[in-house]
Length: 285
Image 1: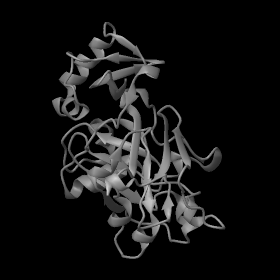
Image 2: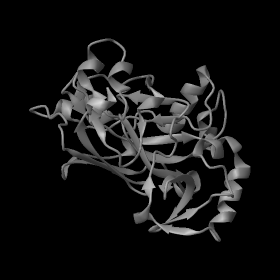
Image 3: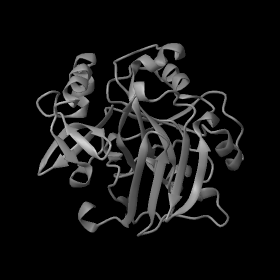
């Protein structure tokens, strides 16, 4: 299934995307994605059985929201593509480089991204996102996919000067609106191999990133094993697994996102997100 959170006629609900329509699952499953994931296999089974008879709404008539409005945790991995580590001039990591994006950075697949007045060094990072579906601890890599609900597309928007001026990255990664993801959660049964997916990022129609998740240094299974060794992963946690080469920081000259730019990220089989950059409105400060 492709599970989405959508708003239609003032009501926000969970649905299943089928072609150019969405099956409204209201009444069959909890009305938030987080509650559905927390309800586990029973809710997933109800969702699957409800799709056939659910009311269908054209996708063009709904607003797709962040699949999970406020993920319990957003965990991210730095320097996790070989080509990206090379463009950074950094050695290949021997253990995953982990940082947090605050849950308030989550935003929708077609929402605007704010460029804050405190920095002009705003960058894009197209990434594969993994959504946890089961509460778990000390998961072996071989068993990791059994705790995954599905996969999505994410943009790990980065405020570069805030990111690199201190040893930790969290402040440069956690600004509001700086983790758009979606457009839905593609469940694991529809993804034969999450580590063989083409990933592309365009800025204003110019292809900037063109890679395959096979270039990941630590694949999502290894990342889940690593993270869950230390702490419990919960339904709705989102892991953004790292970005390939081609970010604006390492272009010559450097290319920062500006007001009006449009970033489009596509991962084969998972869909596309597209976000316009705007100068942060005064009302949001």
